[in-house]
Image (cartoon, rainbow, N blue to C red; front, side, top):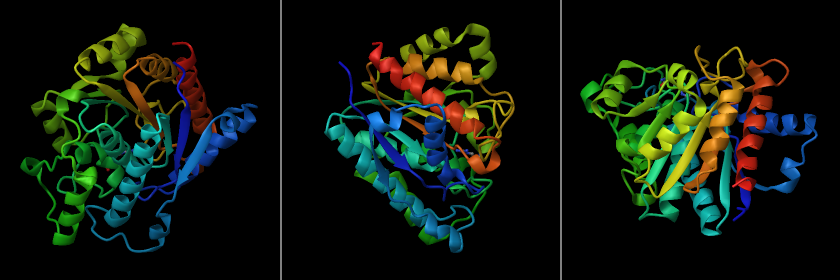
Length: 316
Ligand SMILES: NC(=[NH2+])NCCC[C@H](N)C(=O)O
């Protein structure tokens, strides 16, 4: 069965600490034009309105910056993803900062509340902080904790005001299902930059992680087989691709680059092989920041990965 793709564009950057990720989606569109691709002509797209006007205001809580805007965005993304799935279309989310992935997960759960959802998180980071543990207050470091309904109180370092506690509670409960996923339903690929509170969560909950070195040593194919086998008990799978999973030598065009990442080729193969699996119901590409880049390199990589992934459908 060929699936009808629906592009959901989310030009939101209020969850990032560095400015410019909201331009990532348009940079990917420019890359497509430069490659002479008809991708954005062929596939329908919709844009979720953003709250980037909040960048001109004060951040609010230092441990959950612009959390009210994040809640609005997560709810909007959730509604759009749910509506797309309800129409039997396949959502491809192209977003700015990674915080909106919490909305994507919420939307999938809202469309399929009884299904067990697995998440493959391809990212240099674990994005498992809560406002109680965050070192930066940037909400793009928290989407998995939102989906897992995780506060990580054992590792608490920050004291929150009541308003922040309320917003955080609402974020974890978007769609009225919490938790939306369990640790056993999660696989991290290329995670390599975690803080102590995240590390203790990963260890305590025995989260499955494939490092870049392991992927390189054993090959993409093997890692894909093991990832899908590990998630065999899940009914549906969501793949979240943060371009900071790529090595900074590929491009500097992302807000939080980390050494020892994937090559563009590894990432493209990984995405295309994962997405061939029938359980994959949605994928997302985030964190392209052309203001930090040279000659739009990261957007070009992201576009190539996007094309490889979407072509995988036709080859089923
Ligand atoms: N989606 C991302 N780029 N996340 C980066 C998070 C970095 C760091 N762990 C923080 O919480 O601030």
